[in-house]
Length: 177
Length: 180
Figure (tube, rainbow over the protein chains, first blue to last red):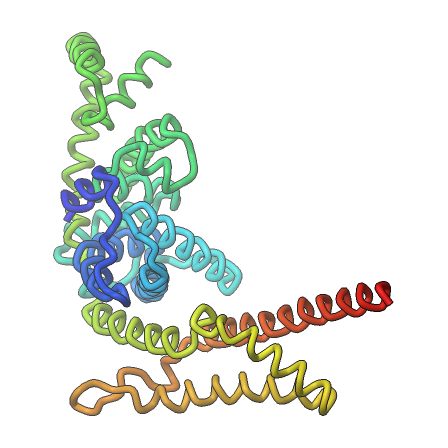
């Protein structure tokens, strides 16, 4: 999946607008990005239900975009998903007085193994900035330029941020052991 | 320290290095145990983070998305401002004609027409279905916000059309009055 995302994003191509309603393009969009985008949102939000809502909203916006004859590419999709996740996090902060103990969330079917859950719990100890940069670069394989475009920051800042996020991930992982 | 930071940044973006930078990094790693340690750390982190490629989406999400996109498609295609836009001018002319004859009743008539159209969309949505007769959307899944926005846009379009045509008539009246 990471390879597909990277190849497609690197090519700079937009999804083809294949039929009158964009349904073919939408099905293709789901095939390519359902897993990776869902993983990104679960990591960013630490909440499976919230991730599901954001994923649904993101894909519906993509569908409407396609119906208007516009194109959708990986960066667009991740940017929309990220903005939606930020709204969700703000909403949670307003609703909840105390931070949610997400790192001790019960395992569910999202996690293929205990190892995946352990990594996820480590990530949840980091800031959302660190989580998103680690996921986008190391799991989805986006380049620093692509991430810079998604986050609206300079590529140099992306490189620096990933380097520091690696150090903090290692520290958090050490503390959990 | 700054020098180390530069090489540590290079370590996390190995695919983006030029041949020259790669050579510089290799030379530095040969001489710097701290950066070699960082290299090992980044490699271990990467191995662990790759486990997240196996994060599974909720099982019901795909079906829900396809269902929701069907609902969105049906509403948008039944009631899209762009599809309705070409009616704005004739509706405005009819509204002006009616207004001349019946006053503000015409405005109420146009609004009623819009509401009736929206109501028909909602009622029809229950009957749109697949080959097996199951509805592809119900009132519960209608994107009400989208529908409301489209109705508001159309109403604004009709109002704008009325204003433009009224201004044109006013200008014509002034010009023709001036000519007399």
